[in-house]
Image (cartoon, rainbow, N blue to C red; front, side, top):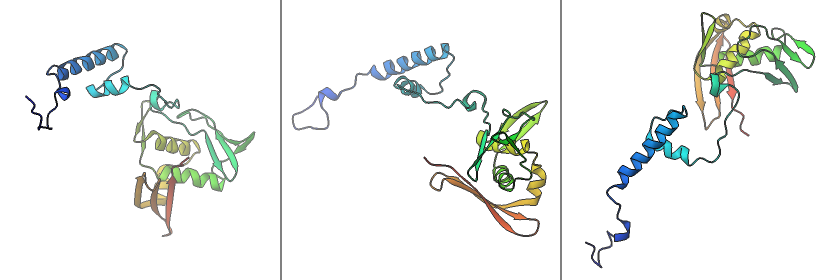
Length: 196
C-alpha cells in the first residue's frame, strides 16, 4: 500500500507477476519459429534484437557463406594490378590492364605481397585437397595471394625472422611486425586498415 508521503512506490509502476513468464514464452516461440526457418539463436534476448531490425547490410564476398576471401586487385604506384583466380585456384595471373605482370620481378608488388604474407597471424592448412583457414579470412587471403605469386613463405620466414609485433588495435588502425633479415637489418612491416 502506498502512502501520500512515500515516493519510492507508485501504483502505476507495478509490474505484473506474469510479465517475465509471458516475455520468456514469447521469445521462446520466436526462437522456435526462427529454427523452422533454419536460423539458430543461442540466447533469448537475441530474438528480440533481431525482431526489431529493419535493414541488414551484409558483405557478399563469400566470407559469410564460405568463410573465404580473395585478393582481386593490388593498387600500387598509381597502377592497378588485377589478380585472376578465385580463392585457392593455382592458375592465377597478375596483370596491369592487358599487360602481364611478374610479381617476382616487380619490386613494389613483391614487397606488398611479402608484407601481407609475413605480417600475418592466419594459417592456411591443406589436407586432401581441402583448405582450412585458421584465423582471419582477410589475412588468409593475403597468404594465398602470395602463394599464387609463387612466393615460398617458409623460405621468406627464415629470411625475415619475426622478432616483435604490435597487434592490431582499433585506436591505431594498424598492425606492425618487426623482422630481422639474414644480414642483421631490422625492418618493420606495417598493415594499415583504411578508414573511410
